[in-house]
Image (cartoon, rainbow, N blue to C red; front, side, top):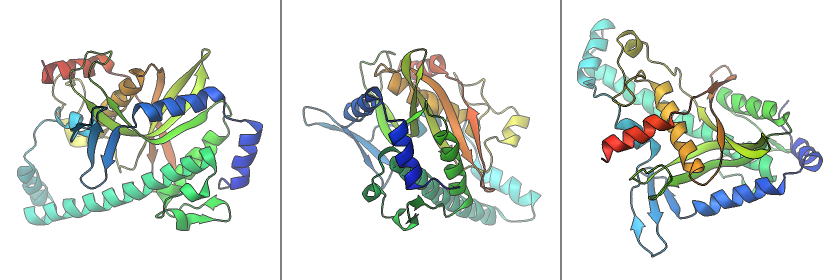
Length: 296
């Protein structure tokens, strides 16, 4: 059964959001309010109190790319073409088309997840974005694809755990200079899901990120032990490693505000309408080492 508006109303009535959770949300939003995101070009700009603007703040994806080994994609395409009786140009065109499809599919899936979480949190129909609004019918935010089905199932399951509260969807955040980790560079990112619950008497944060990949591993790199660059050279160069770094970066941005981040999970949504939660380790020490290498 899909989550209906009446289900949300019932939960909010029986299990109202604690004031501490509301204050956490307000504090996080106000702390990062000066971070601007421009969709075209995927650009982050930071507006300082003195009126100056720091343009094109590196995102988590940019940071991760620094530690990926260089690849000769022409050679890889040629090798792939010979294996499958094709041409290098045909292979490259196929990759390009698949990348566009994956990006569009991922964007619509993330947008559905963002709007569903927002609706579950505040029940404001008017805040459902124009792209997703046609999917709102009779109190339901109806999924239009198997991966959106998977997101709906994730929230249905989460909905049953009264101790967990949705905090923020699509939370844009950054690490300032003068941070508690001694990192000498500003960086930023956007977490798909922030949840909160009381852990050992303290309100703590769980980070979730939707992933729509066909696979999170790369068999060629695993078979040939192709790793990321130091200090991540104990990790195979593949999506799962990249996401481990990504969610650890998000954790550090929130930890710098004084919050405990006790869980990092991928919400891997699949073409069969199911999802899988994958718990990721916290690799804070390696990330600090990485910034020391990049900005000695």
